[in-house]
Image (cartoon, rainbow, N blue to C red; front, side):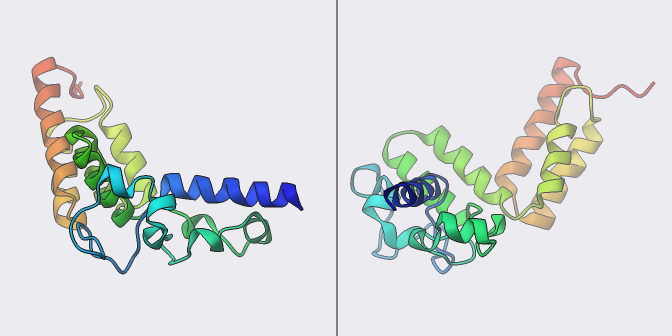
Length: 172
């Protein structure tokens, strides 16, 4: 039985590292008011377990190896949430890590984009894979279809840099 408890504890720790948001909490807010910070709120699973939920609303205690093995817990039950990433961004900001916070917010935006599309965009961003027009179309899609404005700006910036470095797709 001790081994089962250890495995369940490991599963909880993994969940705590990848997720810390609650679906019912609006992005950018904290249930007790104010923003999260690294001194009083990190790590979330230990210091703010009330915030640690899966996209399907499960708590860390709900995630056990038995439930995973039985199929009761599915991959979509433990995906990271935009809220969890926003909480992580707030913690990063409080630790004077603005670039990490920005990356967390960009990742939060991408939780709305289907995995298949993310892989397509990733491949399109590789050097010599897309024209400037194709990258701009991706940026427009991210902004208009998914409200992923920070990520759209990132893709637009990449298109400009690729043009300067001559690594856009050649139309031969």
